[in-house]
Length: 126
Image (cartoon, rainbow, N blue to C red):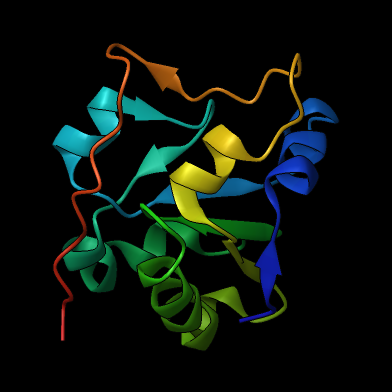
């Protein structure tokens, strides 16, 4: 794992169309309620079986509810041999940090169908 990235930095990467894979490790239900634009849902419990999907990625950012489980997910991804040379980071503050990490007037909202995002956390695969 290469550390944490803050919401504003991630937003800049997305806007610059950088080669970044955003992996949301929350449950499918939580992901459906709201997520970062362009992110993909790989629940934490499924990560060991689906990690090969990240082979060759240039940069991976993991996302969870508050930025704790995503650190472990980033460590797991970073230890996988298919991601050698990949920058792997965790989103500081998780989806909550994304939603609240912008100054007034800036767009940082997650794509949501509902007003609130669940704090439902992932189940650890180990």
